[in-house]
Image (tube, rainbow, N blue to C red; front, side, top):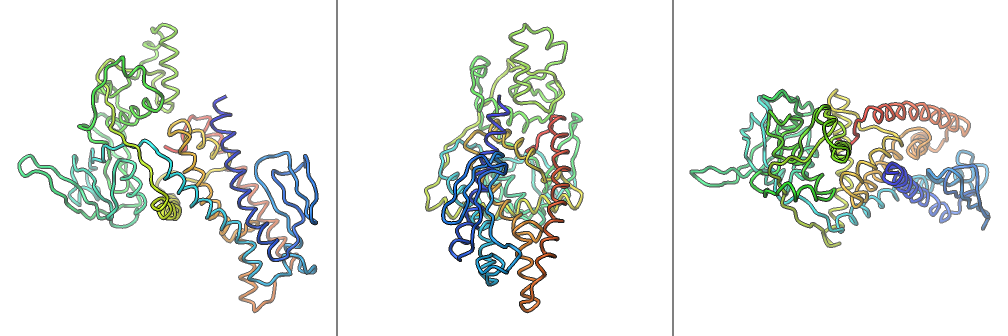
Length: 458
C-alpha cells in the first residue's frame, strides 16, 4: 500500500499536472493565433469520454500518464488554419509555449515551497574530515572548521553547504570558514578551494569507504550543538525524528560498526542474524521494520535503538514572505539546471552515477522523497521535474518541441524554404522509435536498481 500511496499515485498526479500545464501552453497560443485545435485530451487513448465544442474534441482517456493537444497540419501547410501555414514567429511561439509554461510552473512551485514553513537544521555545517591530497587540504582547510559562506552565500546547515559546493563544481570556490583557536579565539577566514569533477573516495581507519566530495571534505553538523536524550525518550520518537537521528549517525560514523566508531552512541545499533533471531517476536518485528525504514541498503539484517545517549539536532522553522520567495524561486529554478548539468558532466567524465532515469525511476524517487523528507518536499520535487521537462522539450531532438523548433531555424537559414513535410514527419517518426527504445532500456535499469534495493537519491 505504501508503494501505491507514496510512489505511484503522487508520481502519476505530478506527471499529469506537469503535462497538462505544458499542453495548455500549446492550446492557448494556438487558439490565440487562429490555429485549429483538433483535440485536447487528458490521458492517452483509448478514449473513455469526450465532447465537441467549437470544432475541438475534448477527451478523457484511459491511460492517465499525460495529456496532449492535436493541432491541424503540424507539418502540412495546405490548410490556412494549420500550424504549418502560420508565419515562423507564430509557430515558434506556439511550439515554445509548452516549455515556457513548465518554466513558469517551476518558478511558481519553488516560490510556494519557500513560503511553506519547514523544519530545517540550525546546527551549522562543520568540516568533519579532509581527504589527504585533496583540494581542501591544499587550500588549508581543517577538520573542525565551520563553513560560514560559499562564494559569498550564507550556509546555514549541511544541506546548504553541500548544495552550494555542487552548484559551483568545476570552478574555484571562495569558502569563508569560522576557525576557533583556544588561544586566539574565533576568526573568519576565506580560502579558495577548487571543486573538482573527479572526487576520489577514501577509506578511513575503520576500513569504511567514504565519498570525499568535489572539494575533498566531509560535512557534519557540529557535535556540540546536540543534546542527549534517554533511551525511553528516543523509543517514542516520530518517524521524522528517527530519520534525523539516522542522518546524524551516518554523518558521524557512516557505515561503521559500533565496535569501531562507537556508533551505538549515535542512535542505532546493527544486529547480527543470530542477535535478531534471539529477540522476541515483537522486538524482532520492530528491529526489522527499523532496518527497512532507515537502513535498507545496509548489510545488517535488523537494527535496534541503542541504550546509549541520544542526540537531538537543533532545528528551526524556515519560510520566506512572497517578496523574498519569488526572486529566490527564480534563482533556484535556473540553478537546478546548473546542478543537472554538473551531474551530467561528471558522468561524461566517468565520475559519479547517472542522473538519467525513466518513469519507473521517477516514481521510485517520488516515494523516497515522501518517506525520507515528507510530503512538503514534493513541491520542490515537482518543481525540479517541471524545470527538467522544460529543458528536455527545448533540446533539438526529434518528436520534442525543440526538434520542431530546429526545423523552423533551418527554414530561417534557408531563406524561408521549408523542409518537405514528408521528410520532417519521417525524422520525427524515427525519433519516436529511438525514444521508445531508450525508454525500454532506461526502464530495464530502473527495475534492476529497485530489485537490488538501491536508492535513486543517495
